[in-house]
Image 1 (cartoon, rainbow, N blue to C red):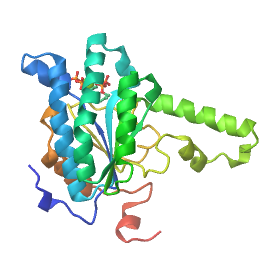
Image 2 (image 1 turned 45 degrees about the horizontal axis):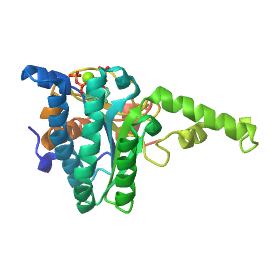
Image 3 (image 1 turned 180 degrees about the horizontal axis):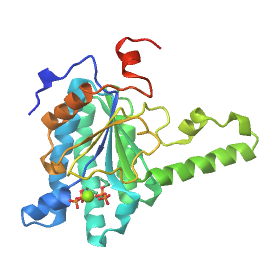
Image 4 (image 1 turned 180 degrees about the vertical axis):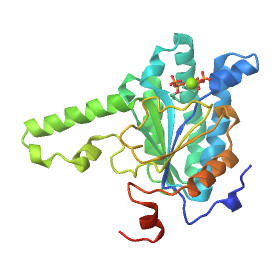
Length: 250
Ligand code: IPE
Ligand code: IPE
Ligand code: MG
């Protein structure tokens, strides 16, 4: 297992996005209900966030609940929402202690009133922190986000704020919920599934993808360091040739 000392501090991604998957299977393996897996996923979140803050990652985005997850059994959805409220209430102190700012992306209006309120409170109470930003993707899907972005662009066009010729990548960036954040250089998915599941489709365009069979409740900061080591062994070419990259010529 990787240790923090092995990580090259000169090559840390600014933003790491994580699909926290496998809670249900983890619980099933133990003969427990799915909710037991979600509850144990909180420990993985705490350890990963601590590790990320320790190595100097500036943004961590966690996929906590997707638009599609609303289609799960009502009992599970309710339990997840309760867990969200509970965890946020308990963690605000630690976030402030570690100077971590909380943000959220997604259709927050679709959350139960209580969850939305607690979330907004925690966002306000941590807004002054500047060591790291923790972004929760909640009731989030990339297609939802892109539809919203298109609507905003059309609105700006119709009101005369934006002309057709002004529409470029920057204006699309600005209409996304991640406006102002760097794109994730690394995306981690646990549980052995090799898919994106409607997560940050635009923002992950050039991310390095890392998949691990570990189920989310078993994931710890050392697993994050393992993912960082894999990231650091890769050559990010952005369409160029390997020679251009190694000789540092444009
Ligand atoms: C991830 O674990 C948590 C959420 C999607 C909310 P799952 O609940 O998807 O667990 P598996 O994939 O069924 O094992
Ligand atoms: C993706 O996991 C969403 C979250 C981790 C919140 P899912 O378990 O919902 O994804 P699929 O359905 O297996 O693609
Ligand atoms: Mg899953």
